[in-house]
Length: 220
Image (cartoon, rainbow, N blue to C red):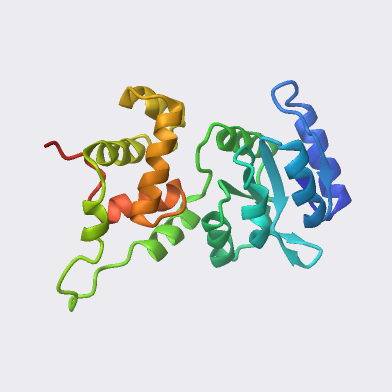
């Protein structure tokens, strides 16, 4: 589904994706965030490509509603260079950000990558996110405040976290196969991990694991 308040831009994106058929199909094109949220609930598109600014409304704050069905993934199509706003979009659940100035082939590639479950972020934005999330521990801190949370993880959960980091961007199916468990069991483990570590998504888990030394599984 395409979401942009400029009809010319919508038309251009539609024509661009026509060339990608039958791999990709546009199921809807809308110009307001209200229509986008309503249609995402009924159509459940695989990908929503949406502009950050929709006639003065910041779509970033509506990303959680767009991806709430568990099927749809959001790709921000942005003309802004506001790194803080774009980082907030990713923290809200967007799987990628692509600039409006990029070549047509890059737009197609970004949609495909997000559909595969990968994160599609340029190095500047990724660096901004990591810089904001990975902060040095103050020298005055006497103890690691995360130690109690990490201690809640089972050995299996520690191994899954390490696999998620090692297979950066890998699909759940791939991780499940490596862990010799079903995808449903993996999802159950991830729900437990997110809850114990107080993270919201795979990006936050990735950053948390790097910051707290969970990128390597520990054996008993």
